[in-house]
Length: 277
Image (cartoon, rainbow, N blue to C red; front, top):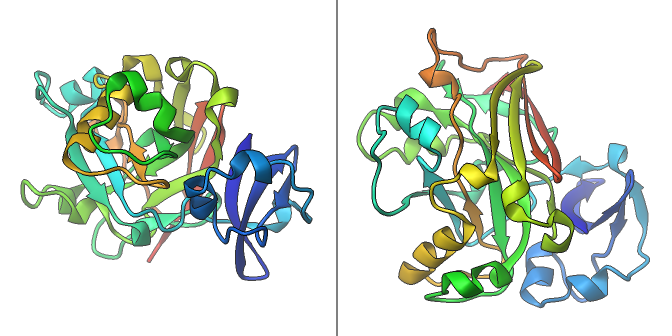
């Protein structure tokens, strides 16, 4: 199934998607998708015949609007390591954090900040934790996944590189696209057969299979859960393949009027127009 968070008339709700409609299931004991995941209630809620809204009539929100943690894997594809000059990489995953306030949903503006002209794209696959755990083994890791989604880890490159700590460049307002929905593992099938494609104004910039990740989903879950307990609704953003704008000659950065699309098959397409703010 596909699950999403949305607003109708300015009021946030959540539900499951059928064709071009979303079935609103809020008010059935759970006030958010995160809460429903934590209660292991998606199977039951997926049978609820709630109000229907056309997808064209709702405002998309980030799939999880207030995750307790957004953990992002950096340099997790060989081609991206090479284009950044870090071909050898590290023996363990590179992890940094995003904040919920920096996210926006599908079809919402992605903002190139006033302070920089270096807004870059990073198409990624995100996984959403369903079952909490600490020191999760690789053998059990995928049983802790509620679903998969699409992320655009928009990066303000000059702010990212001011120091060795690049948190500021990863957390400008409305630079973290997350959506349009979460697809449950049963519908995704083999998570290592997903294909990620990034298009800027229709031109393919990135194209890679999830099978090419250096540290796979199980390894990322095991590593992150070793040092902090993973909770329901937490998001792990699993890294971007080669082809980012900063590595191109000349560099390709986004600006007002651009359309950035991240497609992950079989999940769908995350699309955002760029603005300045």
